[in-house]
Amino acid sequence: MTDAILQQRDGGLLTLQLNRPDKKNALTRAMYTRLAEALEQADADPQINAVLIQGSSECFTAGNDIGDFLDQPPSDLDTPPFHFMKSLLNCRKPVIAAVAGAAVGIGTTLLLHCDLVYVSRDAHLRMPFVNLGLCPEFGSSLILPRLLGHAKAAELLLLGEGFTGEQAAAWGIATEALSSGEATLAKARQIAERFDTLAPGAVQITKQLMKSVDREQLRQVIEEEGALFTQRLRSPEAIAALSGFVTRR
Ligand code: COA
Image 1 (cartoon, rainbow, N blue to C red):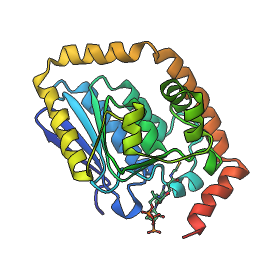
Image 2 (cartoon, protein in one colour):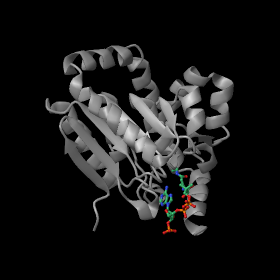
Image 3 (cartoon, protein in one colour):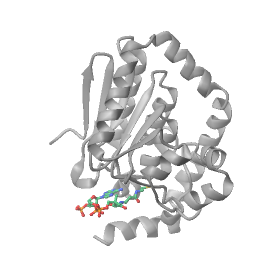
């Protein structure tokens, strides 16, 4: 079986590559667990200066594996998707994301917690939570209205409208939009490697300062969203929508 999370270390950079191409890199519980462990190790390892999260030059991720949501919906916050997001939130090292192709659901949400986000202009991002009978997750109901204003955020969260990498960069969800998937991966790597030349202590303190203002409020919102999300997964609305995706195929 191929490894669905590829890990590579170059100098002080740890690259985590989502590698489940036949399922558009949809994230399984095992993949979340691997990602969480890798992020925790990177956080603790003084030799690691930055973490790069990427998919391929054609696809970032189609979000949570929908079969997993139906078969074993997370029942509380002590489950793999929450472990992963907690380790991302708690990571003191800079996390850089490289996004090409689809970034759906948690594939978009997780970008809100990365430090630098490079996207291909034609990447397609979407948070179709309402469309699936679900609700926002991991702080997106707090962060997006702040970033975009309520009316624009409502288009993304209430209607589940998709948007491009170019729009993500214009709205401040991404750092920069690039011409292709290859260019995106190359730029993200080039930037991530720069952390080997910067003072790690100063980088970590700066990240901590940038994140500390909202930390408590964010934690509360994530808990509230998480409790509602796990309830929603068991709702007839969500079960019908998620089953619809599976049976359509
Ligand atoms: N969970 C499980 N499997 C998924 C998946 C997901 N989230 N997203 C895609 N796949 C699987 C498909 O079932 C298909 O598998 P099959 O070949 O065995 O039938 C394969 O990946 C390719 O998907 P497909 O839809 O044919 O690719 P596409 O290029 O036409 O579309 C997406 C790509 C990402 C736009 C589309 O797959 C999609 O919308 N996926 C659902 C995303 C989603 O709603 N995620 C949110 C979860 S909260």
